[in-house]
Length: 328
Image 1: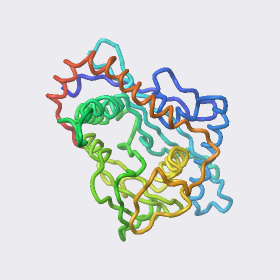
Image 2: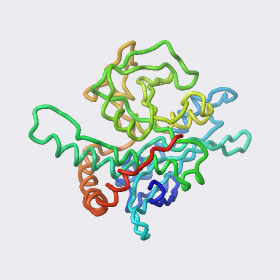
Image 3: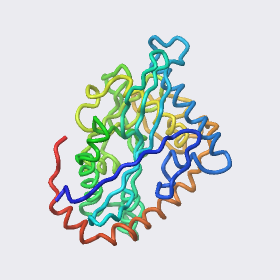
Image 4: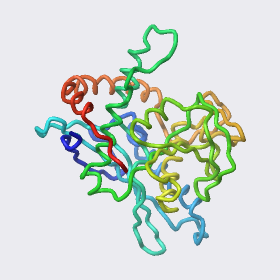
């Protein structure tokens, strides 16, 4: 049954001329930056931050810190569940490329990085809200996130993915502001010192349904750990430059989106409790509308419910019941 769905992939360059398409989730980091009167200035600043961060991390044989630049493609994935040519936008991720200006080489980076999904909006902003309305204690519905997780794994194992990408994705997100993280003695030369959480977060559990593991690392020049979701062996399956491309891209987005954590004026210690109420932080010069992001997440989730979940409910339920989990 897992071969019944058809996926199509298209890419658009994330640069100063980027403009979100009609079927892009407007709450996603790169789309939020590309709107409003200062959209082009926003994009230039964000791209400059990414390049500066990359060169700071890739500092060997790079005395002027200008050897590399990062190119980013937005990967947009549509799904056809009925086999009739009618598609629905499922996910968007980012694909990085590294340009080495000393050797004039363009080096493939990592696919994943940011993660955008309409079905996830539905799960978190519609299904989870309805399930907890009027309840005294928070809980999650039975089989929560399973459809989304199976669809994601199906896409990663599809011919469309394998024809376009040579390695499984790595997704880099913020740590949870309601968990506590403890520093370990394990240190990676690029990803930095590893942290472990006191308990699993809802996001961590959600990505587990997608077949992904998670590890938390804080790079040397960063002030807080990042969550890295991956298949396989994060530390050995990817090259140094590949990992730096993900770090530089996502550190930039997180500094803009969550300055309270990632642009704080103090560095995470042995025990670290993130807080979105931290006022001791520096704001970037990039305009980001967080209030609009929160509002639109609900609207996007409802749109997904009306145009995908309910419209294809019977097909999706039958497919999910017969899904065989692939191995990666």
